Image (cartoon, rainbow, N blue to C red; front, side, top):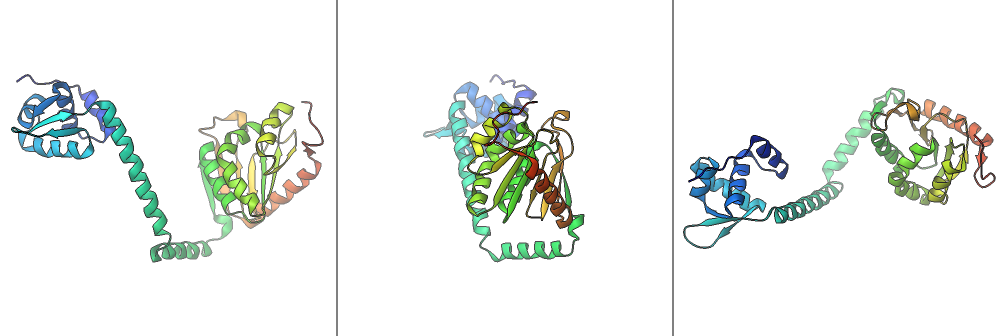
Length: 279
């Protein structure tokens, strides 16, 4: 019986399918043979015979192979394309089940206990001490989305066009829900030309009021005099993956930032009143 030599690199790469090294060896051996018995696969894959039946059973459950009827028992490898489709289906089903499970948890006593523990813990902490470092624009979008979901009165955003365009596709559904709740959404944008803000205005004009402040360099979000997020570097000084920011839960800081925003808002230009802004 000729042994099948499979490189260690390929065996390692096959772990992405959720296979261990023995499973990968048996599967590749069966792929090369099409149909084979357990004994033959043990020999050509150089896998202990005592382990081979368990491995074949595992591969069958995972959807990589099927067992043929007859004696001796033989196994047939499914085409890799079919394996991929089966794995995709399994992942989707697993995700749906996990989502259902998590939704059910929200109605249990355990969830209420967790909420109580969190609220008690927060009560013991000085809000001015609550701060979180954030790395990357994607992480900041997630944090802003959480802030928007909890908003009750207002959302103030000071931002550059490129950063806002990056964030809007993910934030828009949450901003729409906030708007329905009666939350005021004001955006100060640092645009200097019509191209800087025309897309943003068309995309979000029914959700938020946008004004232009050409010299604005800051990028921040403040919500309800309760919490604020601000980015530490200028947009052009960092890559979006490394963009650093800080989220704080501080009434003093947030309210001060909100008052500064409101002062700047009064001097900013409304898009509807001015369609072009010279650099």
